[in-house]
View 1 (cartoon, rainbow, N blue to C red):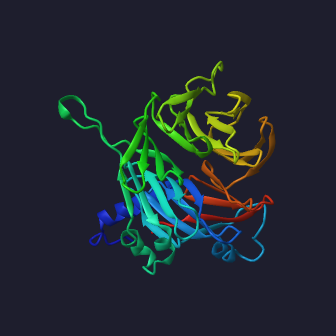
View 2 (cartoon, rainbow, N blue to C red; view 1 turned 135 degrees about the vertical axis):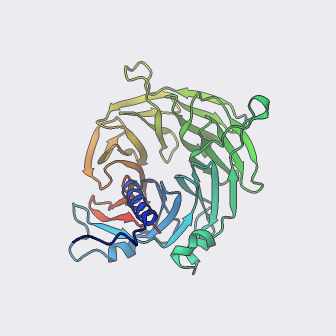
View 3 (tube, one colour; view 1 turned 90 degrees about the vertical axis):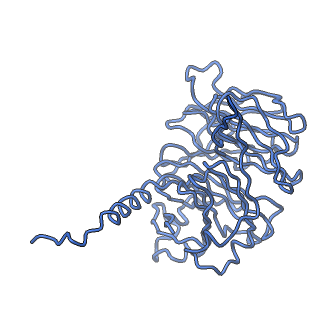
Amino acid sequence: MRGDARNWDEEAYRETILKEREIQTRTVFRTAWAPSLNPNPDTIVVASSDGSVSSYSIPHLVSKLPLGFSNVKAPYLLMAEPNCFLKGHEGPAYDVKFYGHGGEESMLLSCGDDGRIRGWRWKDCIQSDVPIHLQGDQVKPVLDLVNPQHKGPWGALSPIPENNALAVDNQGGSIFSAAGDSCVYCWDVETGQVKMVFKGHSDYLHSIVARNSTNQIITGSEDGTARIWDCKSGKSVQVIEPLKNNKLKGSCVSCIALDASESWLACGTGRSLSVWNLPASECISRTSTRASVQDVVFDENQILAVGAEPLLSRFDINGVILSQMQCAPQSAFSVSLHTSGVTAIGGYGGVVDVISQFGSHLCTFGCKCV
């Protein structure tokens, strides 16, 4: 029996195929725990490759698990609809951070491939009564910053450099963006103007953290170095070379993290994890890993790392592996630690795996396209 092709819609078919591919290849680049008075993990915010910024309720997702699937060793994948959905960027959204001193008055920040930093009042996001499929256009940002363009020959302007990561200084009223033109831009939150530009890296930036106790920032770059910068002068005061005297040249510093004391720095550099004592300017440990390290975070005096394999690895300060457990994303780009000890891992396939402080899968969900 032959089908009737007279009503065949080629354009609709192509759109369906492209949508399916987008869903399959969707990637979560960053997760961040939302501020809350609840001591338990409440809401996770996700930045995705489709440019969206969305939030998900962890208690709601846990309540949707089939009986017997909570707190087990193997994840059960839920397809989750967000509580809040924002059309953040044209192109991928690479990072999300919260600016402010906590609670509903905080501002949700995101940055992305379009060179923008956008900020929304968190209160507007969680209190919106607009239907989810309309929220992307209806919840308006209160902050919209665009990286400057550089003038070339005959007055030609360069493309707008992307923003790959953010750091915040609440006391100083500043946002720092790690950009694709190898510069860091320091933005004044009140005026929306660039206060300072940090120049010194020879290639684009992957990561940035604020070391507020010393009025410094630290950056990781494609050029294979991390730099410590003085925020008053804008000058680089120290260059860290994780792969110095190492045969594995050519790897970038893809991720960095500071501990709570801001005395210890972890650097992910290709298939290597190094730990640095900043007051002593000394590398304490350097450990080879099986896959590229793509994000790190300190858990007191230990380090959690994820990368291009479905594993969450825990290291001590000397680089010794303490534990490894399977996680849902086949390649993970983000690991976020809640104050309760719950960990969120986001990555390829638009999947987020939430792991309890006891090492079981609290819930695992795929981010639905809205």
